[in-house]
Length: 101
Image: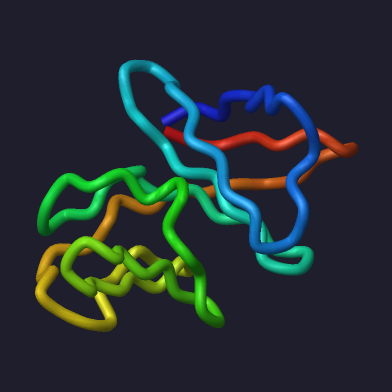
């Protein structure tokens, strides 16, 4: 596994998400307060894109069928999804984000 810099069009505000493509993977980068998370960008139940879906606390809510995922580890916290989102280590270094694939 190696670290990759993430180039965002602008800095993320708290509760903002952006979908990026990195080495053939669609990755959702999320910010909650001063924490960043990197997850697979589509619901594991329906493959619905999560980039425009709401967040509640530390969860992303897929409004298509109501699945919920914990941003900290990608685990489903509410059905109908039963498989977790892939979760990737992410770090902020000198003002730049890096994700490990």
